[in-house]
Length: 388
Image 1 (tube, rainbow, N blue to C red):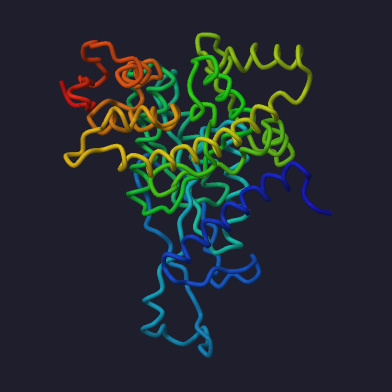
Image 2 (image 1 turned 60 degrees about the vertical axis):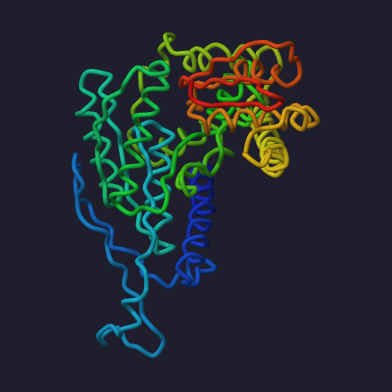
């Protein structure tokens, strides 16, 4: 008898992502990737339970390889040392159902492919006892057989609001962990429900198509962040935890009406489903993927067109910009503003629309002030975007 359908679903989702990671890793290191779990050449690392730590612990486990014609008792030959270690994949785990289900699936699937698997939990310090809770999560990760495991404490600032500040601190900690451990990827437990919420938040802000594309399955520097569960709903992850008797922690912030996403989760989406019927979440997630495809195509078009609208000195020529489709032109303007020093997270559609009027509605208006003390102005048929 096979595993429960929910458990099978989360394992399959993780297995597919791990195969992608192995293929990419093999392409970089010129080591053949196994075609199936049974064909994996690296031996699975031993499962260890090392306990929770709040500092880096242990070094990467070395994986042994056997060459053709060599018995296990023979000393390793020189070629063996040229083999790179198997990739290390970390899971970011808060202790909630989504990330605990992800951690369990990673612990189950990684050894089959000869992939080393570890876990990171981040203590944001926003609730009493958060340090103890983070240590408990780290202990659970170790008990699953993940190694290395870390509990990382961060300081959450105030820039962009509490949700954005916590997210920035969390990703900074994860980026640091990747560099310290030499990890290939970090798995994140965002589900289809999270994707739907992200699309609705983008709609509420009046954002462009890139915002409506939601979260990418692969993101971050070098594609380090992977989201295996974007095709699975939240209930599947919770069911997988229940049938495996995995303890989960429900963050009270997720039901706190003080947070926009929480209100959307508790009130907004249920109201939409009541008015429009079931399937809203699936439709929004599908919208995200379609929007991402369109946004990627427009970004590529803008990249190709940018060189043609600059003069010999590198300044943007207004007449050539005017001839471009608005979606392409505004992408070029946004990229130019960011290159001049405007923070991407603070540069909104209204800013780019004002700069665009210097191209499409020129009546001698003055300079446009942008975030990051960047100024955009029209001079002699050229658009100058620079630090003010």
